[in-house]
Length: 414
Image 1 (tube, rainbow, N blue to C red):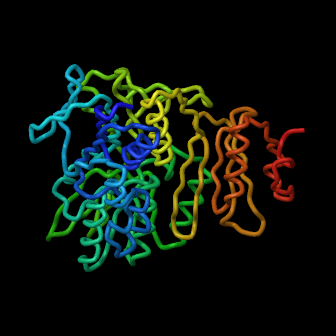
Image 2: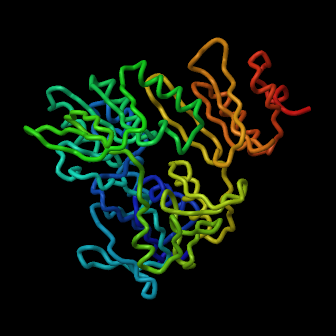
Image 3: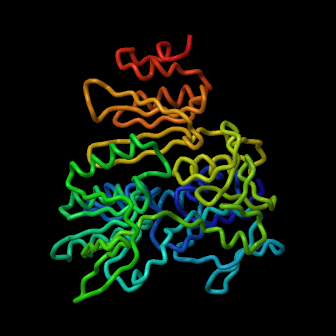
């Protein structure tokens, strides 16, 4: 690759950083410049709601790469710099300060931001945070430590909300989770899994309430009260909002790229502009295994798409064809998920006789295994991944029977 060419990356989180190093490894000799509005050296995001929140570590203990590593690979970081416009015709980006940067190739890795619901009074609440950045965690830590009663209300019973609830409970908080739907994790998992995590939090002293629609936040005598439309009221020294995300696709839309619940990319992570690629949470791509368009919020997706985009820019012909996987840590439980369960019409739960906190849930559509949720059971996760990739026909009866030894040859249809 010509060393006079410039590749600009918008976004320096997992996708953008991994892309930059992958591009250099693939043979790009030109400039690589990463722009990010966060002034902090790029860091790992998953620990924010878990280990980082419960520790006293500075963010430099959780960096993706050291500053010296960027220098060694001749990768330029422009941190604390906000991109305001993509000029496709001139092939340049324009920053908030009016400066410009030309590009030969542009990679859009801007990710997503927390969705802040239009709850009356929320903008006036004190000690109210989403959880997406190191600055958010620092604010939560400081507010939590400064509060006398440490009463925490988490709005939203998804994975981020539940992980944060577990972490703040570990720190000694009095924690209540309010979920609008009839069960926690309703969008992403089966009732069995929802019931398990509801009990897990209850057993650890966290109050998890479902069918609780937050209708407003009131301020009285310097304190917050979270109000629900059924009349329930919850005093809160600290409020965590974890109700989902919004894709940072505005720059792409304004630039005229194809956007549909994410920036539309092909199997090489290329957008509708041949010189612009997009990776990570902000993209909509076609998954060959499930034969449908999906947008994924996961580190795995960001990192894998980064490698594909880097290879494509350097003249190779990669195809992004990966089975998605995810994880969540809460208390002493590790949940590992592989595949996509949407559209399932049957589930099989395999309970392990020796441990009520070790089981797996297998999602099927007809005879096709779609996904597996494995709780404290890495072997089920590994086997599920193998079966899904190979499109093996799994015997549901054998999966359900914990007297059948958990080996690949024992679990497939005869």
